[in-house]
Image (cartoon, rainbow, N blue to C red; front, side, top):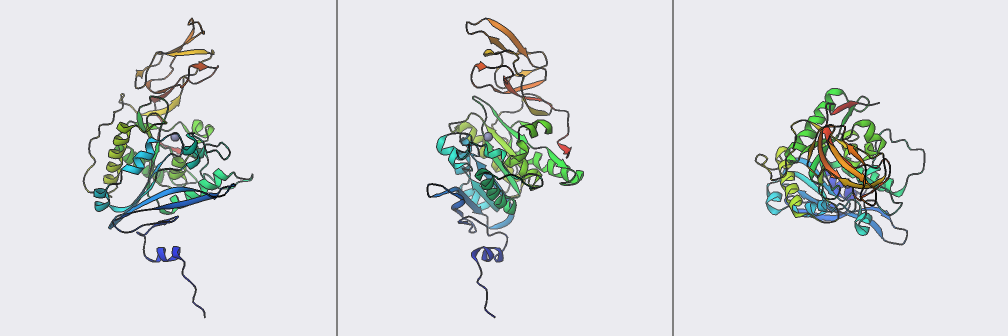
Length: 370
Ligand SMILES: [Zn+2]
């Protein structure tokens, strides 16, 4: 009987769990290796591909994924992913770190949030739910499936790096964990605890994700981070690192410190997490992501609050003026919390969002699937 040829993928599997191959990147003990994961062939020739760096520790341990630029204009994460793996980390590492500085290469080339294939948000197209799809899927969906397959096969934790609105501060979003079909309530609580532990180690103010109904209206159940937690049961945190378009060095350094702390918590590095220089939450109660208030009157927005300001119900958020400067209305908040970001642009149509807020959250982080 003729012997069957062993493929390189099988060989990698035979050699043990530690050795890891993603695209052309193949890990080597004690080293950082680089390669490419091909995503799709381009219509005009050439291939869309993303850069992959794998650092394999000399000792066994979990695998942490660190990813940047799923939104093409959110670039500080690229710098973080490029910089945080230093020789001293590699020498002391248990387990593997998979670093993908750019998840949305077409968005980075055009400096746009979306990919340009069909102008879709790549972070609303990850696999979630039953997987049954009845209409033809776009290339962005196929690309995300290919990335997520590698992620689900290899990852034990995820740090996904983003940026928000102009002049926004830094914070960490933690996902709401579903139970029911996906997992038991106890398992969901365990996963939520693991996620919170990573978020606390990252050292930035913690924000619970939008309430589930809002999240689903925004399509955020198909974000990378929600799919990681809820479809792959991998604890994941979203680090929001300030304003888009430029690499912000102060935020980059805080994120690098925070990721090292996460690696300590995961026992991938020796020692305890260190106190970071990052700003702390200005309130002492749990908060969730909320968009609003909105304006019911169109006009020119003149904010009365700045990023980081603590507000209580009834506080004035913004005036809406005529082009000449006469105040048409003043909008108040109906929630307690603090300001995460102010609306970009001053021309507001009716029902436009004026600020994003971290608002008091009395709900649990685990939630029953509907
Ligand atoms: Zn983003």
